Length: 254
Image (spheres, rainbow, N blue to C red):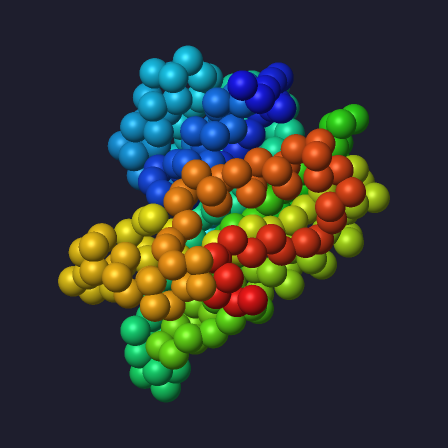
């Protein structure tokens, strides 16, 4: 078994389900002490229980990434739990869509901006503030999407705009802070095995049939495959990778 993250502390936002949970489990399996963060305690506790059942080390911390005080407290509590912040994965995000841009409710637009863009910005600021004071620096991976910079679909303009912003923010932050010893990159998943990729009323089987005609690979990505990309970017194997956006979408945006 790889142990690339032994003695490292990893913070994962949106870790209560889906890709965030898979990322938290993957880091723990490779020796990291993991802080699972999110707005709701119960799913975070489930993530921690899964990690501990597998022999790993983790703690749950509730936080709302749209609130700067919450994010600062999250970083502080991470360091209090495990002594450092070596890797941060900014995965928390929401999807609102299904209608043309002219019909996008203002409330949905503001929710998308607050969580997907401002949430990443506030997280970056709090994480960098800690990491640049550490002799070892740190690594940050933002979870963006293949929808945005890489490809577009009808009915998701608000989400697309925010994820394009995440990619741009990642690259700009990477240039700003590589001299501080902090590597910043992004991973952009396409359709993955989460509820977010299900259309209203669609079953897993329905989705599998639809995806065969939409994705060149012929299937969705597993959450473990997305997590593997995150761990690569966070690892010493990617030591010279700075400001990249690694797309994991089965060829959809090729």
